[in-house]
Image (cartoon, rainbow, N blue to C red):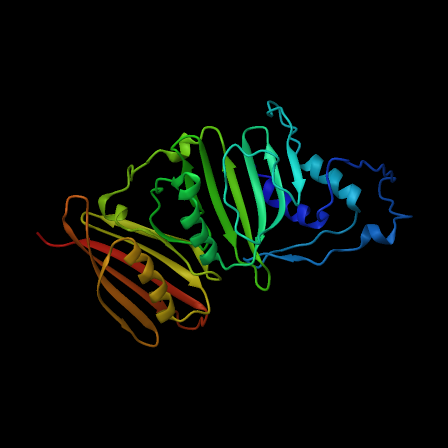
Length: 323
């Protein structure tokens, strides 16, 4: 599974030709010698731009060489590697899926990779923004028998797309992750990861575990698309209070960031008390209750960083109300 993200880039390059007839061209060259190499073998494909600014460039080879590389790349060579056949279908879904998975109308199927360990990954291009893709799966999964997976005990600021939408089929039949990444000027890159065994490990409610009471009240706050978290964020707790914070690299104003995070706090059941905006600081205060009904207060503020026009600092804190 860890190889599949890179395999996707290679799959795009191969187009939609069938993969049943695997080609294995023989190429021989003396060490250190590249004489006689054709022009086609050294041409470079235009780099593929990813959402986080990284680029992937493929240089050299032809279709046969690329197919050979894909097959070799995903063939495990370590001791004890699982047996079976991994099947890659370019431009097509697997012939059989053990669970029904909705596909957005008009989606272009890039490829599917079906592994012997009852794991399938599907690559799609979808002409919808990320929010619409999230809404599509939220609305269509129930009709296919799926339910949202139990929430992970994740608290605080997270990067855009760090966590997928997660669904379970009747608690233990199958587990699905829906990842999507907006690419500037291109269709949204959608990845569906389907597990059809051992799904119960993902579909059991985990609860907050060892997380302290204050931190367990802070929901996961996803950054806006195009905003990068710097340093991974930080946080801390003491008796009756907790906080999380992060530095952000973004062109968005402090007011826009406040509105973005406010919406997520409302969705988590927090009640807005007050808010305010200045040119460099935006803030909001909240009321919420813990599982015992005790009242807590929350404070969110976003601040523009001096001498760094595209940097913001955000912090969210909670504190138990005095008894």
